Amino acid sequence: MSDNSPSPAAPDWDAPITLQDAAALSGLAYNTLRALAHTGRLQTVQVGARLHTTTRRWLDDYLRTRGTPGGRGKPPKPLPVDYQAPPRRGRPRDLCR
Image (cartoon, rainbow, N blue to C red; front, side, top):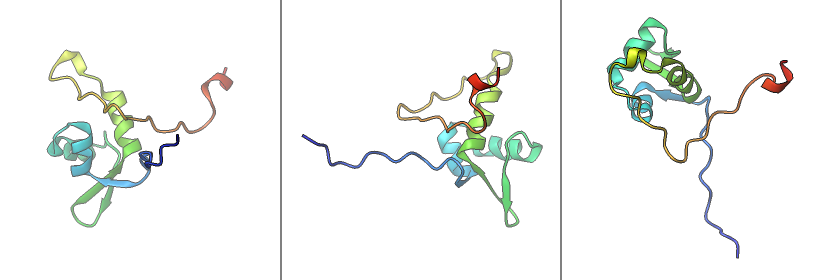
């Protein structure tokens, strides 16, 4: 018996997404992401005069490095159940020894 229902496609990690979409994915406020983009802590590309876009890969990189400094604030939103980490780039870690 084969299941003909389409499987959920893996997200395109390098496709541009708006900061509003990134806020919905990460659970962070849009204004927080704007401030992070302004200070350079979140990598973005400016499109036009005001629109900043990022990618899921850049958002994932930021979320993995930020942690919760000093245990202050609420913890980050847990990742969705169907979350798939982006594919690694470069050499595999076991070959770097």
